Length: 134
Image 1 (tube, rainbow, N blue to C red):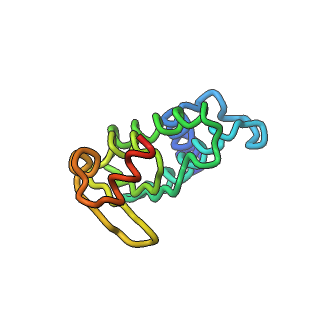
Image 2 (cartoon, one colour):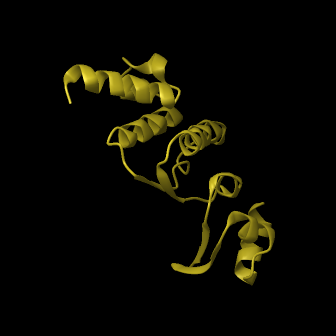
Image 3 (cartoon, rainbow, N blue to C red):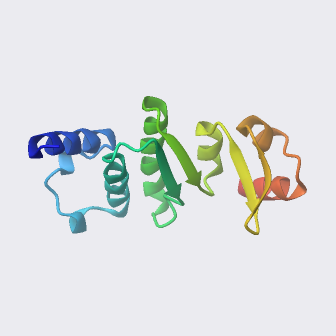
């Protein structure tokens, strides 16, 4: 794509992640949450069909987590991009998922729609985990 197209796409993506006003800012001057949102915008620049997210909020201060999760919710609602998220943010997983998988010791122990996993899990380990985090 041309430089002008790339610039327009970058500005569009910064708008999508709520950072249009930071277009000319140096990365070192952005907060952790802002840097994470820029990383999401960079991944989206490739126009992926699937976005892989591994504990996208794990290194953030608690007050920054909501902003990043809101960006991901917007992406889930406004695009047809499939998101595969590894997360301990169970409210987020329940809200945006079509399918939830519960892992224990590297193995899938339960999978199903969020209503089933969060409302009536089959496995004791899933019930224990959810009672501890919800």
